[in-house]
Amino acid sequence: MTIDQLAKFENELYLNVIEIYNKEQTRELNEELKTIFANYKQVHKNYVELSNNDDEALKRGLFLQWYAWIEPSYLTGIGEIDQEAEKNIIDYVEKRIQNNTLDVELKWMLNYFATWDFVFDRFSTRKGLVELIANKTDEFFPTKIDNDAMSKRGQMGKYWNSLIKV
Image 1: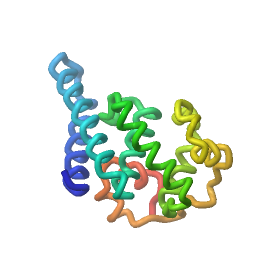
Image 2: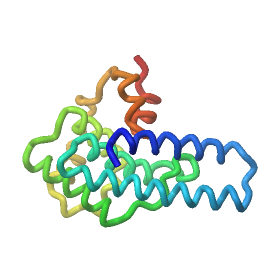
Image 3: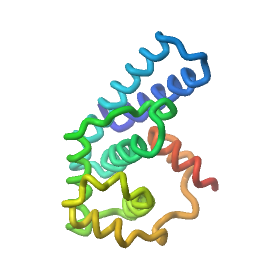
């Protein structure tokens, strides 16, 4: 799938999650939610497949695995993330940190995510990431973003739009 197709699929999954959340829970709805979890796991894997050469895919994959740790799955649709895929995202991030090739947006995202440092505890062998977390700063966080552009970036875009309003 392409980045645009993944964003569209994410939006559909998220709308289904919200719809399920607002209904009385039944066995059928719980099964539907399990299907959404499986689909999100695949979406994450698709981002990982693209992320070594695509910063946008890297950002979205990193966001999904961070979000899976900090928000309940019944609200996000993001259940368990594939551990190998998660490790690959962190390896790609570490490579960019070590090569000093993080773009501005990825820098502020990582610094923001570092507030929840427990999310990265199991990656303590990634020296660049550990150093970034230890020295986190909010100096990179933007004061405004393009809400329209962000709305086309899957659940990551929805999250950032919920924090920053122009």
